[in-house]
Image 1 (cartoon, rainbow, N blue to C red):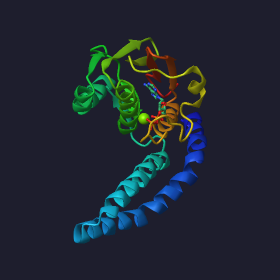
Image 2: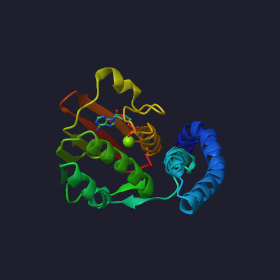
Image 3: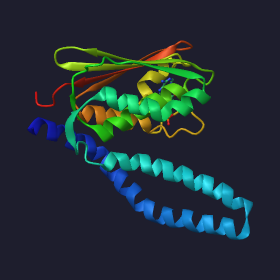
Image 4: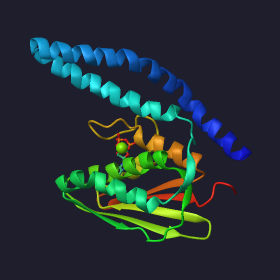
Length: 224
Ligand code: ADP
Ligand code: MG
């Protein structure tokens, strides 16, 4: 499908350079981490702990950048997003319990299959779900709903977290925009990229102090 290829080419052009650099950084970084671990175990030097923490941080950022370099659409198949989301809820169970967050999946049983790259959508949902849990440090409900129309599937991720100040909404998805001490500010950018490549949309609504809803719309077929 021509239109589709053009779209993804344009999208990945931005990421390509950054991803290329990230790739080049990775090998020396792996070496640095390895030798620092060796130093730590050999001399028990406390500075090595700090160095390893900082190296981990670089590693995290580099890895998120690498996601941009992957072909926008690599393995398109018909997938059941309910099964995907249920498996992610299972993975996040421990984190949710620790944070006193209750997750409710209200996705309809026979949701239509969606043409998508399941590994890419996994990254999208995982980041959105982590963001929701991270926004509820004192707990709350996190509800995932679906709404199906003739051509589209809408997924809603509704949290009762601290919400997002109005003036920050336009910054969501900009590289490195984060309000978290240990955030990268790359998660939503990757989400926007992947959902756009799937011809879908992300729309975020938020009321400060009340919560945030992330709406993801995906076409049932990419062939239109
Ligand atoms: P990170 O999670 O590393 O900070 P993201 O790109 O995933 O990066 O998110 C960027 C910012 O958007 C977050 O730091 C946070 O301020 C805001 N944000 C995203 N999702 C939510 C949410 N569900 N509730 C409140 N704020 C959110
Ligand atoms: Mg995030």
